[in-house]
Image (cartoon, rainbow, N blue to C red):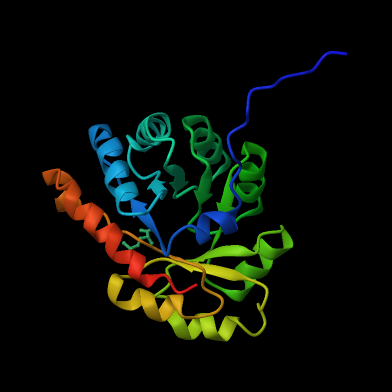
Amino acid sequence: MSTLLTAAAPTAWTALQVMQDAPVIPVIVLNDVAHAVPLARALVAGGVRMLEVTLRTPQALACIEAIARALPEAVVGAGTVRCKADAQAAAEAGARFAVSPGYTSAVGQACRDAGLALLPGVATGSEIMMAQEDGFTELKFFPAMQAGGPAMLKAWSGPFFDVRFCPTGGVSLQNAADLLALPNVVCVGGSWLVPADAMAQGDWSRITQLAADTQALRVR
Ligand code: 3PG
């Protein structure tokens, strides 16, 4: 009798696991591939390892690839995933999860096909219902503060009692605690952990401190 050995597959993350890992998912915009690994290291040193690298710059995919190769202790995801090609390219670069600013069934299917956990972006009840119809119950509320903030999340907790959110957009260390106190909020997303000037200056210790400061936001 022969034993079939296969290479260990990398851990497949669920959207809920991605959300539960830390209070904040940093929204990262990288213009320089040389910044990718030191930045990721700085965030991991501050206790933040779920890293959303947005597909907004020509360097984004190379940055995802660099982090995925160099830092197995980080879990790199792709943000700003808007179409099938984005999902495929992100998975090929080594992303383990995807975040989208809105939701379409095509993006949902593409992420499933690519093996990426997806946090679909929603801002209305209809969008929540479309995402739920396709089997997504962990959603990004975007743009959170501009679209109603905590009051909107409270209103949604009635009809959408079975949905959990990651509010993103206009979130800061100052307002994150109010959001995280809501029972239907698992984590928040935000760019404040990664200030462009700190990155330009290579001030990685400041970024580690900003990440470490978010640990105090853990509520459950
Ligand atoms: C984004 O996709 O740009 C995020 O929502 C980040 O928003 P923020 O810069 O307000 O944190």
